[in-house]
Length: 201
Image (tube, rainbow, N blue to C red; front, top):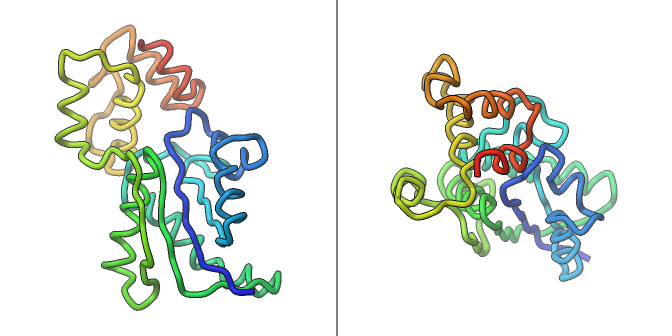
């Protein structure tokens, strides 16, 4: 039998191991791959850079790297198929939720711009993602409304510092005490995002 391909990109991870490759059998978000496989899709669920077994700080909501991990997995699929005598067709479905919605949209854009002739989108559903970070998300976070996930703000800033390297020299230049010390711990990996958020609320 020949199966269509489906890329599912996961939401914001609270810790380095809160990713599909580590939680597929533990009722984590990775188990969504089993659902899609049961519906007849070859399910591809990439971890993002800096998560799972990947080194370094995760470039959160950075479209280019979110798309790249999925593209790498798609490129690796033919070798997997050959090794395990598995067969996929040219159909490509893309979806994701929360950060995965942002990542899925980034992949879709890559497929339709840089990868024309290599992959063709069959259908896509980008769900509940932070698509407008510079405008809508910025306005929400800086408004007088209570925002219950303040850890997302340093996560995004540190992500862009990791990718572009020119936002600041020291964490304390952008974050006040006593928060800067906790954010520094998050940046060096001694606190995870869930722990950081609990200490900032």
